[in-house]
Length: 106
Image (cartoon, rainbow, N blue to C red):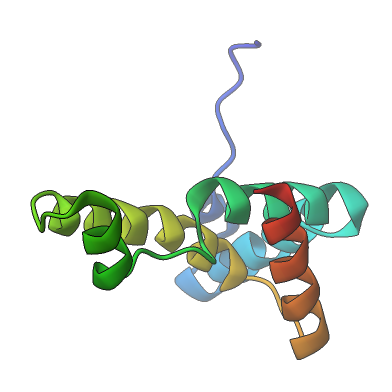
């Protein structure tokens, strides 16, 4: 890896320009088949569509111990996918397709 400094949105200027530059970068990265595949994999890996429920936890473990930590970790992982999706403009059909792809990866 070169010793080049990493690019960052703040280099674009004002906060509005930085936000716009970052949004365009996310769109470039997550567009096309490769981007869709990576986003589906992230959603599957983080469990974005498989959030834990207390009832399922109790049925599986028979104890409430650990559920709070498990739930917090699940929510934190899902927050990564939500952050990315906040920069993308996905319509309902694309969101359904993403969920199907993520579930197929799991």
